[in-house]
Image 1 (cartoon, rainbow, N blue to C red):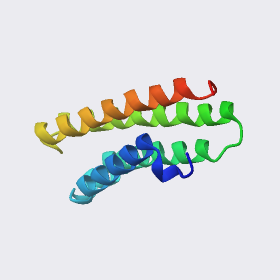
Image 2 (cartoon, helix red, strand yellow):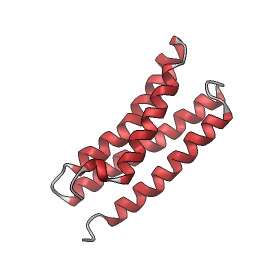
Image 3 (tube, helix red, strand yellow):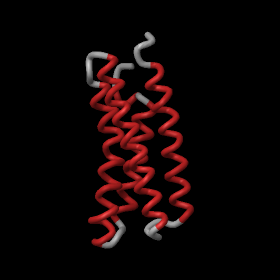
Image 4 (cartoon, one colour):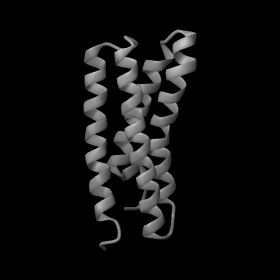
Length: 118
């Protein structure tokens, strides 16, 4: 792979984060400053950690950052659930984002398994 932007899991994570950003942007001040900031930070950490791991020269370091990305993904799922439970997002948007996050998790797990086997 010649470029990080060619990595499918990175592309999907980045797109997912942008959807989260656009969603939180519409919230009122209190919601943005509490759940919103946490949600955006955890979502943005997914592709950031994939990027940092990609730039490491040793596969073990890359894997560690992918583990961090996976942790951020699960944290993001938690914040999305809270946002849904507190009626900040409707069920359809929650389902779409949650389904997308599950897809990212599967791709991330596959990517983690593939590293170091070349």
